[in-house]
Image (cartoon, rainbow, N blue to C red; front, side, top):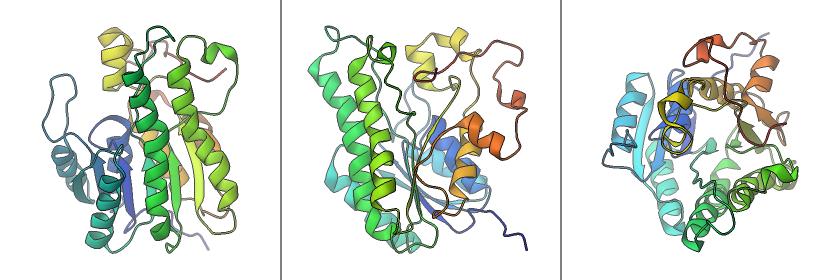
Length: 277
């Protein structure tokens, strides 16, 4: 007997889901008929950061899902607590958390103001921790609960620290939560996994920080991360935890190795992502 893999009826709390990878994950889940809690700050579109929680909600519902847009700054514990409670009350429970929201500054020690350092650690490290902590009481009651952090494998080659140690540490914290929490909750049915792209993904961060339109042409679309996340989140939580997946590795496990459909400009050499040897 084959069990259907689907996110239909699942309630998913996604941070930073108003654009980019977070929205792509939401849209893939929406095609199954999932309920999406969009937890992000943007309520007014910006010329360099298109998309708001409300426009994302419209796209999610057009794709077949149910959406609840909740303005949330994950740096603040009370806002996280309220957003999760609002989502649970609206949809009747919580099944999955995707910690996608992140801040980046690829700057060296002398070039990183403490305000920037604090922002990265408040969003990446602390933000993902507090979201997970506040969601866990509900996840522990779910049938197949997952926490998915958009963070890289823990690679301690000094080359990944020398030019941007503050960012690397803040991002690696999200991976440490996977490492620790997957063991802490191994007997309690909640899965903790990490997912990271092998190549750069066409997002506002790449366009604004890493090379503009030329860099975008050497990227894959966020859709590959949506499909990869779906492949993790539809697996049995007891059998799928403590993993550091890349988009390519999890899709290969699904038998999907032809990834040309995800290239922004097929045939253009792809820009490799950070933290992967």
